[in-house]
Length: 401
Image (tube, rainbow, N blue to C red):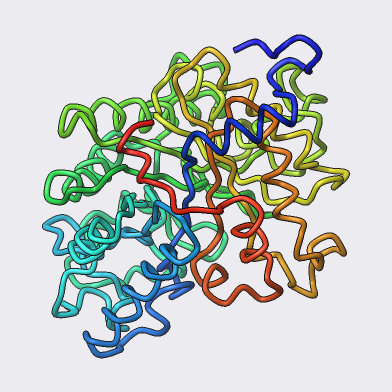
């Protein structure tokens, strides 16, 4: 959509931006992470009543903050927060891999979120198996123990090998089980595809590359094709299963630096998703394989290597001409963290992000990382966002404009 006369391309004059926001609803989400008990449950092994109460408290906090969506991590490490026939119960519930917690967290989350007028997006990590490298520590009967040839250690963790077609099909089946069984509003992937680079270590997929890499110019192109297939096939299968369920991805925000590729962003990031994670996130948007994208714009305005104010318009341009919704991923967890640069000590930094985003016609909302900080709000940054930008409750995105 072209900008108005007198405005930069893709941007709205400030007055019209404010009116547009007042008249239309935003996507206002929060990530609720379960890996390593990051947000919930507060520790493994809690009684069912306490686990359930903590979960409902997070949903209630989302309502209090005038949000309208919770992105709930239900498959953090090749496990499940529902009674899955494919994978074991998550150890983050009971402290014991594979142990039945005695209730259904995903089923409860869907029901209770909808009761509160919140969307519930089921968040899956496709290939991470464990945050250690010992298969013997996995639940008995875990697919990674049944099929040790599927698994590779790297950087102190275990991963399914994305280069094996049987792995790709299995993880899709495991994730789609939740889509079939629950009234989730969306399937959500995070930023982990091939693992982030670890200095001095090699992701040892030589055998898979020898078997399946013929016809590709190099290993990187083959790896990218593996991830493209995961995403495009998952997109098709979600719509085949339940046509109304959306599919979204929240990638690391730098696709490629402009110094690497003229189509890239004006950044100098050390990691580029296209080259290092073998995730061609720009293509997924342009091909319309996904319904929404939430780039993790986890840097302050003015940060030299990756400026929020430069990355936001880059992503706004990426979604131009597509029907893919753009939401900005926001680093609430950095607000007030003494280890972070000075801008993050200012409670108004995040609010400035949302003010800037109002000028871009294709930025349709924001997602905050993460639920623990939405609740505790260390320096009042979330309260400032709510006061400045969320004067009233928002309807669920799925209800339409």
